[in-house]
Image (cartoon, rainbow, N blue to C red; front, side, top):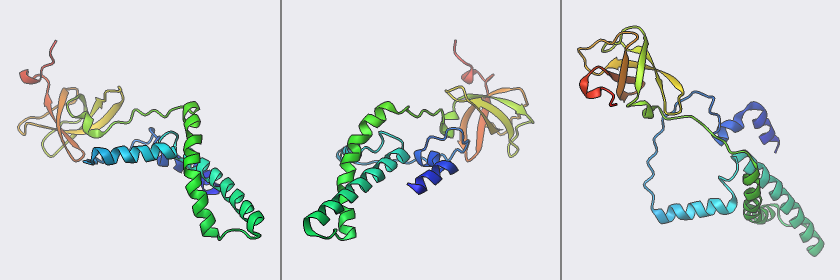
Length: 201
């Protein structure tokens, strides 16, 4: 609990919860999980049973530790009253942990209903391909990208580096382009004046 409190003070909990939408770091990690449907359903059922995903992770962990401690102390008091001595510490921890998980799942359900839900407008950089951008400054040439501004489907502006898709072209500041592909951190763009790229009415 002390470590969780320190994490809250240092802001680490936002990273653990994955809710820090203000951090403009696009990791762009594309994970393709081709898992069997039945196994996914089993995992989802287990996570639902223990309450994971219903509340932010730090809230879930704090609740679990609190319940774990309460069950652990109660178990040891019961064992001491029954046998005259407490249980071996690892056995008590195993019993308390196993019992705390489903109990924490029950507690997480009403908590998830009353806690405000986290929302984010963060998008993957790959979703910017196919969107219009305006070249802000410089001249975009092959091997010499220029800075452009593009808006995602949330309306948030992103500054990206663009080069012309056509190697013989140069794109000047103020021109509107279509981002047609991406390689690494560089986008490749074509002018919207081209007939095949003209917006339909």
